[in-house]
Amino acid sequence: MTTSAAKKLFARAAKKIPGGVNSPVRAWKAVGDTPKFIARGEGAYLFDADGRKYIDYVGSWGPLILGHARREVLAAIHRAANNGTTFGAPTRLEVELAERITQVVPSIQKVRLVSSGTEATMSALRLARAFTKRSKIVKFDGCYHGHSDGLLVKSGSGVATLGLPDSPGVPESFARETLVARFNDISSVEALFQKQGHDIAAVIVEPICGNMGVILPQSKFLGHLRGITRRHQALLIFDEVITGFRVALGGAQKLYNVRPDLTCLGKILGGGLPLAAFGGQREVMDLLAPQGPVYQAGTLSGNPVAVAAGLETLRLLSQRGVYEQLERTAQQLELGYRQVIASHKLRAAINRVGSMMTIFFGVDSVTDVDQARQAHREKFATYFHSMLRRGIYLPPAQFEAAFVSLAHRKADIDRTITAFSAWAKAQSRG
Ligand code: PMP
Image (cartoon, rainbow, N blue to C red; front, side, top):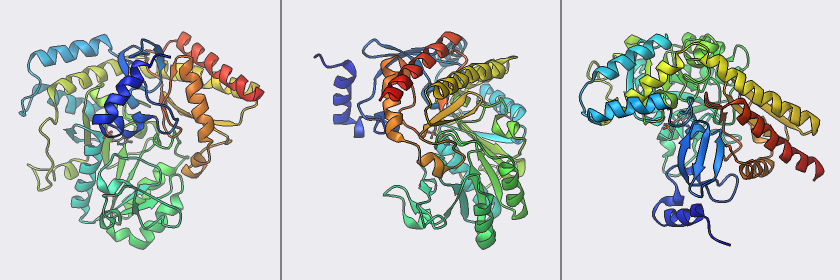
């Protein structure tokens, strides 16, 4: 048997890049085997180094809501790049993008551009601490906010309120500043505030969880978070790196009508190039240097090529009917999956908000991270590989969102459901 291009490339990669990848989930550890190497993307499709074509539901983990290589975005990138790729000085385009962001996300009065979601959340927390003059933050078990030290913390059983580091290299003294609550469990937040409310600078939350698979906020959860933080004069930070411009142009805060103090954006904002942002109330944002004393900076922050891609992406997302189309396409996918599940009597739960969706196997419903953790990961792995063989490229882990883009057509959805049905049939036989 000949060795595939992917296997050869991965062997080379593993010699020079830790684990062979530049971000861990790309190594497919959760589903086994080695990853495909991608040669190019076009619309809803990926083409790998071995020449195979896939319908893509990863969308580079969220940014590609328009699909791959959208013509207008490429043109904007070319236009910007022809004028030079970086100046380290202000440009007109970044002003336009800041104005656009404040238009579509009304809780943001001022915004600063950075290059990654990790930077956005890290900087938002520094700002919240400076504004409140408090040091502790609350995050939720299972929510991911990038890999800065204080955010690489989730609860382990029995240490839910202590905060232990998830990674060697994160000092326990840093991790202790992070308190962990349970998503969709407002009493777990109340308890933390009761005990240490005067020390808590901010609550940071993914308003719709995307990083333990998609988990929806229960009715009033986000509103309650707003109420508690306000009562205790702590800031509420929505990490909308995934949900921003995804579930609505104005993000999850628009969908659920809750106004955070600070918002973190990324992914879609850069239209596929490295760009992220954090923003919020004027009086908080004005603490940032050079206006205020809170230091934050970046050589490539507001990079003109990334900003051009982002502006064009937001322009295209502002056209009429865009979110309705995303909803229709994703709904077709969900309904097709539900029919297959019912006809093959599979035990599975599907969570979806707009164009983000996760299927959890072996459970009836998933409303919190504990239920998510009960999902059958081995079953997910067989599903993943079966779909891949049939040309469907899904996120290679249970605890991720699959994304539908504007480039997905009904025929793509139908093919995906047919592939799922074939796997389901084999399951019910086995
Ligand atoms: N916040 C959320 C909700 C995310 O999903 C991610 C990345 N998946 C981040 C922050 C970190 O963003 P980045 O990978 O750009 O640093």
